[in-house]
Length: 272
Image (cartoon, rainbow, N blue to C red; front, side, top):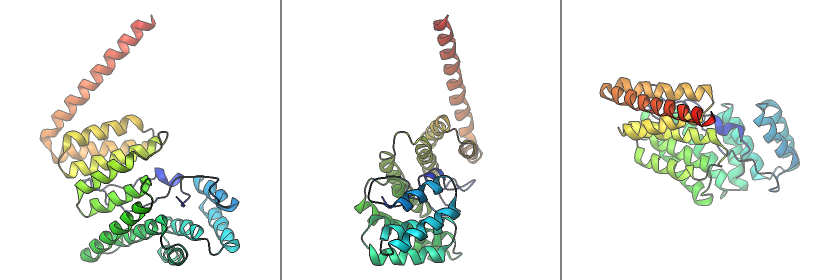
């Protein structure tokens, strides 16, 4: 894995408020594992730290200085391409991708970045047919990336996003399920993001029992206020779209609250 964006892993794509789709309004950010000791330069490691701190301006400086010393390193061009894409600079992101394609055409992250750029373009075109074609090309590039690096959980997430936009929800669920197993155990927020995405895809398929289960599980494990608000909104939206579902959800929550209260009483009695 070549991209440096550990901090970006926790930025979840915005879900359509009523459609509960995975359509995104921001760029898909990927390549989030920070693996020192893999031959990367000190400047690249410093750039990763700056990105984790949210200091993108200095990260740009470090990456460009690293390129001055190693202009033919495709990994540096890929990292810089991701950073440009995150800051909505499509032209420069594409230029860095072109360099990466010349220097490292068969690298997994070259395909990954190309897929993300295609997906970004699809999100920013007003022509539905062109948007669909771009998303389909993005899917093919994400799959090419996974053939070269099958354990990149963020590529699975981005693949699922494009598949969901194309209304291929079953395939999106399969991608999320496979990618979930490669998320580090301690990375709870990324696990939550996968659960939110799974909930959205299940809701699109009207698999409401499973959707609610995944939403509530995500709600249990996240401490991120934005994620909690998003999950709560998704549950409320499912209630609005399916009035008969509301009573069932409320009953499930009431039972859960009752069990929690009983457990608290038992714990109190045991401590006495």
